[in-house]
Length: 146
Image (tube, rainbow, N blue to C red; front, side):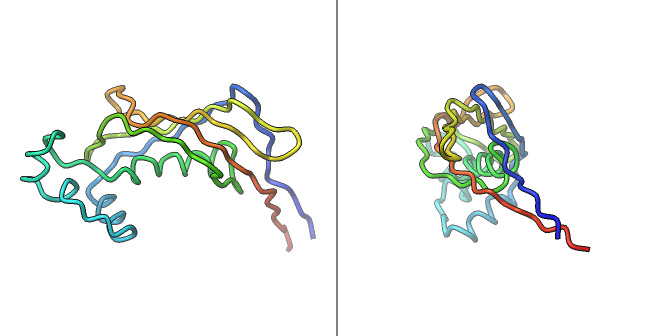
């Protein structure tokens, strides 16, 4: 059996990002998962009468892109959030392409703990989420048995 580690040590200044175009199906799937049936996400008349003026997606959809960046890119597989501090600064609407970006601001050498600056930006350049996160990365192993 050949066993290999997948964890890499991040370094200060390292960045990663992923993008996703939000569709109506994302709202439906998030509603099914979370139970969030706020009329701002479905009711065109209610959303139009709100300060947003149209349908907006759930904040969980906006922040979910950061889950993907952290788990898939940086720090990578085996990573979980220990703490997040996020401010939602602008709405995301169906059809918007959002980009989640993380930047390493601190990486401990004694433990696999990484601090990140986090942002989510709409395709028009507007920052829709801004904040920080602290992550822990477990050492995953894979077996290559044949």
